[in-house]
Length: 302
Ligand SMILES: O=P(O)(O)OC[C@H]1O[C@@H](O)[C@H](O)[C@@H](O)[C@@H]1O
Image 1 (cartoon, protein in one colour):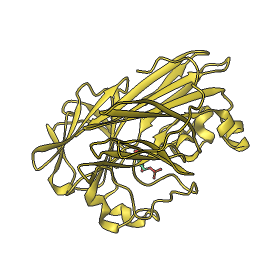
Image 2: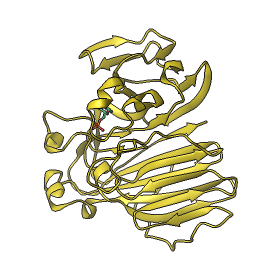
Image 3: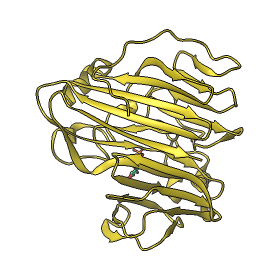
Image 4: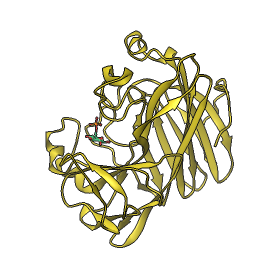
């Protein structure tokens, strides 16, 4: 993990060349490798909206996703902080669902490393990037550094949360990753057997019994304290392996036919081509004391 006590200052931006690198447009950044892989990140929410390997898109992005900052992005990898879902009590209860990290414009800190095989870019978010209204709603001085690293066979996302104030705060973190799948009816999610989960569809708790979870209807589950690596399979073959560092929980979400009622979800049957496998720290609050730093990460391997 990155070990830094302060956000680095922006570094000069070099345009991507045929050899790969980083290119910047007004509202997004693209990383690419000479071997052809690429990842595109919107400054809005620092949302990864595309990850291409072997010419194929690996993330689901709704055709009606708003990319202009008017709504959280429906697809890609929205960032959930400081609250997962909607809190009913405590300092985050005033915030909208999933907090503000996914609805604020992040600062591009710059490309932090590059080789033939990997390229990394960092983004930062602090109170200065929040609207006055949001600063009032969540008045804690904080600093986030988000690093996105593209390799030939993986996409690595790392987060560093720093408490820059004098009061302890509670937070959740979650990478709300929409993975693209060829056909949901052939998908199985491995690595959850024996794990206790909260089922948000039936408002109940249970223990996962399946070695491979099949998705056959709406699923919205928070699996707490998952010790194994989660593997998404298609037709019995591994599609994605999601490795987590310091993220104890995994949320599995597919809206199924509820997608039709979601204004920014398109096409209507797009739920057949996606599964959210969300690596997070959400089943309990994490406390961050003044001047302390918390780091976590998720790597999706293909
Ligand atoms: O529509 P949103 O705010 O992006 O949330 C999508 C889903 O996100 C999941 O993480 C939640 O568990 C679901 O309950 C929620 O419906």
